[in-house]
Image 1 (cartoon, rainbow, N blue to C red):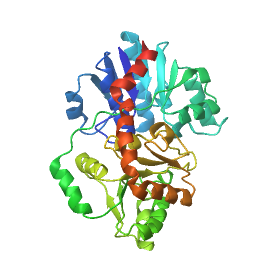
Image 2 (image 1 turned 45 degrees about the vertical axis):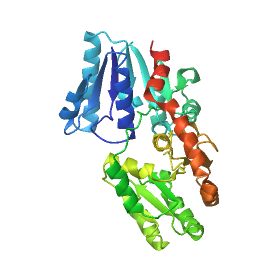
Image 3 (image 1 turned 30 degrees about the vertical axis):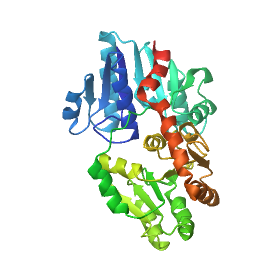
Image 4 (image 1 turned 90 degrees about the horizontal axis):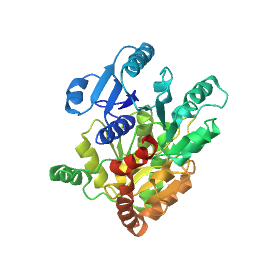
Length: 360
């Protein structure tokens, strides 16, 4: 049996939740697994559908961490467990066992100044596990530079499930929304500084001069949402930018499928960094190429000049010229075709084979 300890798990939505659910679901096809997860409202209906045991722990954050660790430590004493996989170093901080532990790392949660109190806590946990599983080469190097034993760190990219065929009505709805607008750019992410919506909008102002029917679709919410909306108005781009949030996954995926380029030239903002970028992979499944940023792990998800482009997200000219080169002569068609073929390497069944090499 393997224990999976996670703070992020469905029915709550989010990238980490999808990652931990995908990993657990795929592992359950090959191993007996039990999940210890944080309490979520309406979790019972979700939990009852799964073929593995999920134990939920509630309460305020600090006490929940202690209570969860107590339950796990008791469970480990009474049951035969082969190993533990955790979503975050904090999930392992209070676990007392000689069982093999494996910890996933994602980027920003380990990006703290070397020698700081937080960095020391991180290193203490990560240097006492069997393997540290980084989501990209970038995150691996970040961990090693911050003090993690290099022999412990390996790279296993996040996985994705094969996409379902999209509903015809949903696709028709998107076509009626977008009408004759082309080319079509899209970003699906939180609105925060790291995602770089601001520079995409600024590049759009120049692209509009060449491509008057261009449209930029933004799906998400976050702290920067109102600032980006204000910028769109200020630059007179209200006809070029469409905002969506709280939409169904079917509509979201249809909007992606009917777009031409997925745009997320992420930057490093303070300690926040794009460790991988599963959104690039999700777009590629629909044959949509991506523009990613050089700062972070995007180059693990995007093959430069084959499935998309990597640019300097801090350089507005580079964002503009990269987008223009993808739009010119509709180069995005070739890149998108390549992306759809390339993305098969991220299928969960293939990713689990990498996990098996370290778990067996």
